[in-house]
Length: 199
Image (tube, rainbow, N blue to C red; front, side):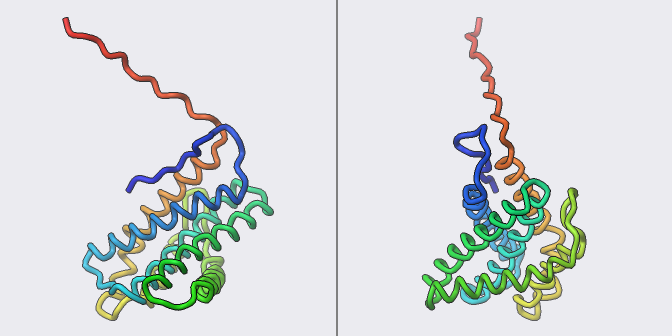
């Protein structure tokens, strides 16, 4: 999956609000891609409540990943602002999509998502995340959460799917996205090889 992870105008620092807005869009695409990949791997994820339960867990995992990455790059104040705005932007997109397809109040759906983010944040807080990425237990916690989403026949296998395939790929994409978005150095223009005529 290709993602856009560069600013249109480079060479300046961007606010936590701008950063969160860009990352929220990328996070939604990555979670949607993980859902599609998991269904292609023959896991039964029914369109409906289960579909959105999977999305919620993966989105929350990615919010936690983004928060841990910016911990090393932003001030405490900017990190708090970034993560709060990110969670709210993702929650709005999630609530809009879920309410449109399944009904219910977007406001109440958003609040339930935010409550779930806060609950899961307490769980992820127990596990390390260093410069090399998430600790084993950090990613395993995602598998545990997904275990609760899946039907019995798939629940024991989904942990391995998350830990071996979906989580590493998603973490790599988030890391690359944030590294590029936080880079204030303008990119060097690409050099195009001059076309020459044949003799």
